[in-house]
Amino acid sequence: MRAIQFITHETDNVSYVEGARMALEGGCRWIQLRMKDASDDEVRKAAAVIQPMCKEHDAIFLLDDRVELAKELKADGVHLGKNDMPVDEARRVLGEDYIIGGTANTFDDIERLARQGADYIGCGPFRFTTTKKNLAPVLGIEGYREIIKKMEEAGIDLPVVAIGGITADDIDDILATGVRGIAVSGTVLRAENPVEEMKQIIQ
Image 1 (cartoon, rainbow, N blue to C red):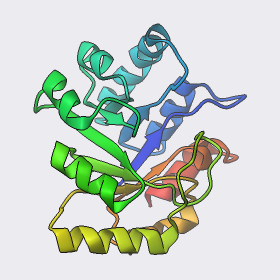
Image 2: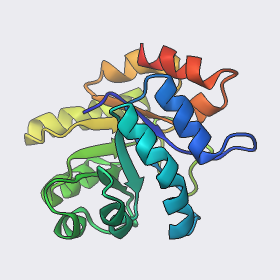
Image 3: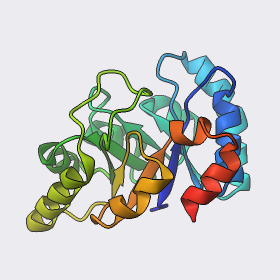
């Protein structure tokens, strides 16, 4: 489980590909290509550049949501949102060798994803974020603490990755709750120097 994950996001001056390149240069070793409103062909085009860069940096390359495309491109896996294909169904398509993560906002979500055989949980949002439409209730530090406690009580040992409006200053506090990873996007891309920002986050 790589501790820091980067989720691609397009801004006025940074493309999906450029964002991934900067994240990798800054030391990130887990890239999720998330292009919600793009066509499969547009994702293929971006993946054709990002996937080799990930190989070069020995980084994990995941696609957001597109299970069939992940299989076609031989990505390392997929991340599935609440309205995407269920994890167990994706597992039937992809087999055991692919990483499959799922999005959770509550402990109930986590229980369901654990039952379905997810490899990790993307859990959030930590705070309000503009990169996501239809945001679920914000968790904050207390929310993570509560969820990790319930997971321990239920014997669910899955890595939880916190997501949603996280900045470098939040990371120590979040990891202290027992969360094992952090996903970042906007905080890196909005920085004056995204590569340096990523380095700081990794450290």
